[in-house]
Length: 610
Image (cartoon, rainbow, N blue to C red; front, side, top):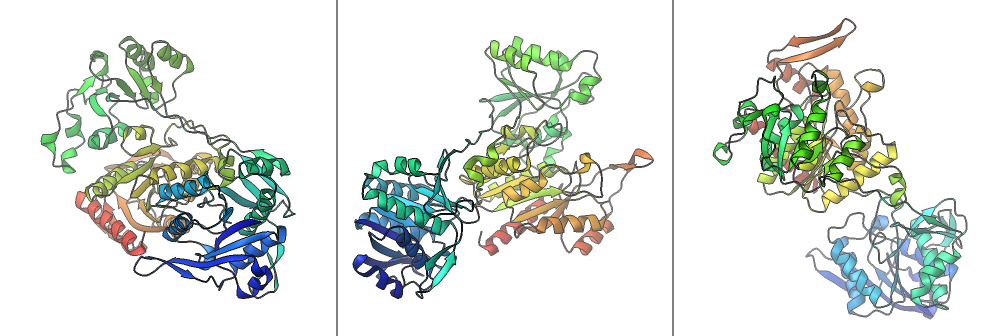
């Protein structure tokens, strides 16, 4: 007779009568107020979930003995520490088990390696482990662990005797998601559905198989008996750049300013900054031009970075990689192609190429033929929406999103400034960037969907990519940052170019609990308020502050055409926006104000218990 140990909410005294002498033991495990792991006799089911799960198993196979361990509370979720300690208890006490059934779990796991270690230990002891996934299609544990048979429900499967076997996915089985009549803790019939009971039916079938076959044959028997075998697509990992040590940067423009301003946050060394021969910046110190001393007092820790003419540049220098920014507009003004000039010199002098724009296939072949590397940010996401059978990860760390009301507001710079301050406070930060040079920064992953992007993802593909990237970043970070491109919502109805790309998908996938909204002094207050309401409509997201930096002019677009308008600082306007939105505005050019903003964010997460 197969022995099953059920980890759930216990078993009701009334249903015990149905099982009779097939109950071996009843135990309660929990963490007390002093953080001690407590083991007690008895497992009275006061909630009813465990009784229904047992009824589902019993419906399939009555030739089973049971151990009941009560370890789940309301909503049928387990505490991470209780789950791990209970599994260790089963291993250490050698609780007789052929199958461990878990129809509860956790959606984030800080001690995942420890959980997997004890699961592996139990598996080596010959115990088969079955666990249900969360009903809301969020990746949950232990169901997602490789040494566990993870079961989810599918409403297209009617019978509890049918299932779909899944290859190449964290979901191993889809079983019935339809209503089925089971016995509840009061001895009455109740119609229920969900992953908990889908998994229980499968456990019942596995128990039958164990009466005939060995445990190492069960997976194959489940596959052979399935109504269908589904091969889930693999998640397509994004192409990553080659190893880079020292870079030369061209041109000295907006996106590359961030590399210079934040040189100490890079994982590469900036060796040279270049400009076209007509630039007024040639011969000047890039650091001084960016007024970096306004934001850092570490002048003695850096050398001068004199901007050089690319046409007179010594390509035989010590840098290994040429970083080529967006130069499409600049190239159109030149008599000869800058692209060809740069490609040729890279190959001639043995330099790798990191380009923000796509590199022609023939040029890629030329680099590879010369034994060199070349890279541009490219996203390959087709089919990713079906990896993990559509399940998403809940992000386990605090997440801060930075959004805007328009383009050119310094959103990327603000993210870097906030990261710097949090790291000075001792936090480890992770960052999902949308700028092509994001890979050059420490602890940063990039989905380059910004200016001049050639990326074209479907809605679900984008969500899966952003979510999986944030999940990976969360493993080695205390706090996570990400930012969207341009405006968050449309100002008014307009053509496709006015619709923000991927902003909605990023918010859904990244789960920000706190957001900062970058604004312009001239924004309509109603538009700012609408943007705040939009951001705060997502899953408890809170806009903690507004941010801006003073601009000398603005571009106006109307029916009369496009023109530039000079601006003066208008502190009264800032106060007006603050009062109307009841949200403080922080000056991005002032370090003390960004520090104050970070203090607000830190306090918010401390109070919310994140």
